[in-house]
Image 1 (cartoon, rainbow, N blue to C red):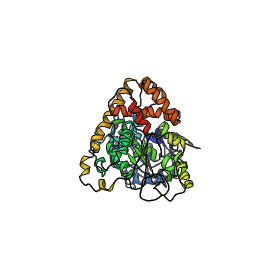
Image 2 (cartoon, rainbow, N blue to C red; image 1 turned 90 degrees about the horizontal axis):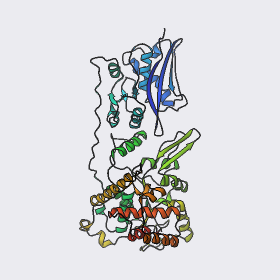
Image 3 (cartoon, helix red, strand yellow; image 1 turned 90 degrees about the vertical axis):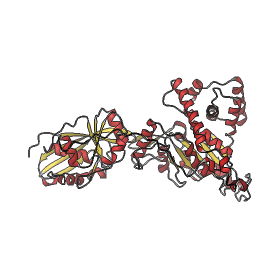
Image 4 (cartoon, rainbow, N blue to C red; image 1 turned 180 degrees about the vertical axis):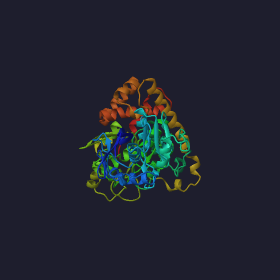
Amino acid sequence: MSVTKISKIYSAQLSGLNVHIVTIEVDLSNGLHAFAIVGLGDKAVEEARDRVSAAIKNSGYTSPKQKNQKVVISLAPADLRKEGPSFDLGMALGYLCASGDIFFDSEKKIFFGELSLEGKLRKVSGILPLIRGAVEHGFTEAYVPKENALEAGLVEGIKIYGVETLDEIIGHLMERKDGLLTEQPSTPIVYEEHSFDVDFSFIQGQETAKRGLEIAAAGGHNITMHGPPGTGKTMLAKAFRTILPSLSREEILEVTGIHSMARILNKPFITHPPFRSPHHTSSYASLVGGGSFPKPGEITLAHRGVLFLDEFPEFDKSVIDALRQPLEDRVITISRARGTLTFPAQCILIASMNPCPCGYGKEENTEKKCVCTDRDIAWYRKKISGPIMDRIDLWVSVSKVEYEKLSNNNSSTSNENSKEIRKRVLSARKVQAKRFKDRKINGKSLNTEMNVSDIEKCISLSPEVKSLLTSSAEKLSLSGRAFHRIIKVARTIADLEDKKEIGKLHVLEALQYRQRF
């Protein structure tokens, strides 16, 4: 058999959240049958030989295994690790082009999809970031499995075609009149009203904790709630979701892309901030990410949302200390021998903890007596290091609620509901977004994201406020980081009251939340 050309088809591979274009080259030559896929592929890529051969045969063409020829499929660049079955469609089309069965112009077209043995396309992961990367690289048409079409339709600037079978896409590419595909319309983002099991109006008492959570939501600040068991810490954390505003369009694409890559996306897009609550037995890699080929962990899956760590000191100390970089820089960098990847980690940390291992604490006003020794308590609290404490802006005490309040069925009507609190949070966030826009500070929209330079540009303090801050910092022996974090919290409190300048009361309230257990 004489082969006239080498075919080239384009696909893409995710490396972290970075998109690399992969060129699928197919070469056929005379000789005994052999089928090789080269280019540093994983087991799923290696097994594509059988899937592609069966799909081609069951779509009405001659299988590569029925011909005496050497088939070499190269996935370039060769030094980039290729993972997953999304190259199946590109390899099948590349083979058919090289063998002369079909002809089409593959330039500016990109292909994704896993093939079943009968030639149907199955859903693949990470389509949203892959399509966004394809747009950045100048591609004008993308062909994806039908199940991925809605997700891919979120991306603008490229034609999306949802494909069900290999024969269907061949008909379209060969421009058969009866086989042309319909372009996937742009997917509209519909903001649905979320229904939650918990609302702030359901929680009796705990006004200090509610206020702290409102400030945390408004400015994106990290918060820890401490108190004896059964006082509502977990319930408060779950209610926190109900006061967070919906995501913007860019945030929706960002969050949806991360969840799609992690294979946990069960709907076309995510409009509400994610809430991740890993168990305290979670490993280092599951929380911060990792593996031989690094994957995102819980802190990245909580990007633009909430990471709730219940029983905070019960986590392994190495896991807790690994939070230092993401809590400060809002990204997490994972280094391995094969390379370094950086994942986004811009989330609000909510931690909850008991005052001691038994939970009741010597200084807590509870009916149950603490059975821990001073050594036990010191060991328990020592698991949270000073650098981690420094990075948590708000520390609130959650104490026992009187039984009379809990038994009053009508008291929920007097409590402020989440919808009312969310309005204030949204208003404060709009003020912050306008502040950063006016100051031409790009990429930041919340007070917690400010660095020292941003604080100098955006926040002016009166002499009496400066004096109060300085004297308080000296008395409390605050670090430089804690000093600036108090300013940011005070700024958020002022934003909630729609005040242009930070007052003494705002600073005093911010200082109050630095009082730890």
